[in-house]
Length: 341
Ligand code: NAD
Ligand code: UDP
Image (cartoon, rainbow, N blue to C red; front, side, top):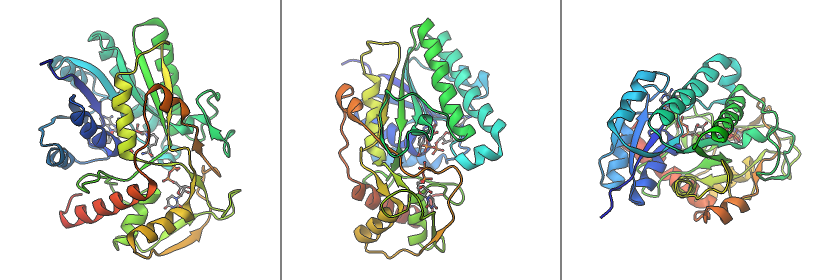
C-alpha cells in the first residue's frame, strides 16, 4: 500500500481549514495542522477527530516566526501545502492596515522560503473574489476578468499574495493554485464542526444563527437601497464542504501553465433578505431583524461564473444553500450544548 501523503494545512483550526482537514482525511491524505489560534481554538482538533476517527498532528504557533515554521517542515515530508492562515476581517483591515499586511504577507513570505528550502512545489492559496475589485459587480465574475482594485487592505493582501506567487512560479518549479472564494457558509453535516467566530460575528450567517439562538438581540441588515431586486446585497453563498472538496481536487490538478486560478461559488446570487427568509423557512425559527445603514466597502452584487472549476477540477457543488443553513444551525446548537468556544 502506498504511503499517505502529508499535507500542511496552515490555518487548519479555522473555519474553512478545519472542514478541509476533514475532506483530506476522507480522501486518504494525512493533513498536518499549523495555526496560532488567533481566530480559532485548539478544541477544533478534537472535533475533527470525533468526525474522522483520526488523530491529527497539530502545531500551535505563528507563521511569522520563521524558526518555528522551519521546525515544522523539518519534522515532515510534505507533498503540498494549503495556505489558509490569514486575518480576514475587512473592516478591521481598514483600521489596522499594517497589522494585516504584516500578518498576511509575512506569513506567506516565510512559507515560500520553506517551500523553496524543502523543495515543495504544490501550494493551494486561499484567495477571494475581493481581488476582482468593485468595477465588475453585478455581472457573473470569471477568472479572465482582470483583477481590479480591492477596496480594503485585506483585499490588497490577497491581490499582492497572488502577484507574489505568480512572479515566483515564473522563475521556479512552484505551481500555485489560487482559489477565489465567494461566500463560504455552513458546517459539517454532523453538526460537530462549524464556524466559531471569536466575539460578535462579522459574517452574516453566524450572526443569524447566534441571533436565533438568543446570543444576539437582532440582526441588522446593512442597507436596503442597493441596485438589486429587493434592495439588499446579493452574494454567492457556497457550502463550506463543497469549498473543502475543491481544495482536495486542486492538490491533484495537473498543470499546463505555471499557475492556475479558480472561482469557488455556486453561480447563483442570494440577497441578504432572501437568506433571512430561507433561514426562517428551513429551521422554522422566526428571526429578529431590522434594516440599518450600508456597511462601508459593500458592493451591490457579487456572484461567480464557476464553469472553469467544474471543467478543470472536475468539481461540482453537491449541497444547497438550504443544506448549508441547516448544517450551520445544527452546529450552533451543538456548540452551545457542548460549551465549545
Ligand atoms: P478563519 O479566521 O476561520 O481561519 C484562519 C485561521 O488562520 C485562523 O484559525 C487563525 O487563527 C489562523 N491564523 C491567522 N494568522 C496566522 C498566523 N500568523 N500564524 C498561524 N495561524 C494564523 O478564516 P476562514 O474563514 O477559515 O478563512 C480561511 C482563508 O480563506 C483566509 O485566508 C481568508 O482570508 C480566506 N477567505 C475566506 C473567506 C470567508 O468568507 N470565510 C472568503 C474569501 C477568502
Ligand atoms: N451583512 C448584514 N448584516 C450582518 C453581516 C453581514 O446585512 O450582520 C450583509 C453584508 O452587508 C453583505 C452580506 O451580508 O451584504 C454578506 O456579508 P459577509 O460579511 O457575510 O460576507 P462578505 O460578502 O462581506 O464577504
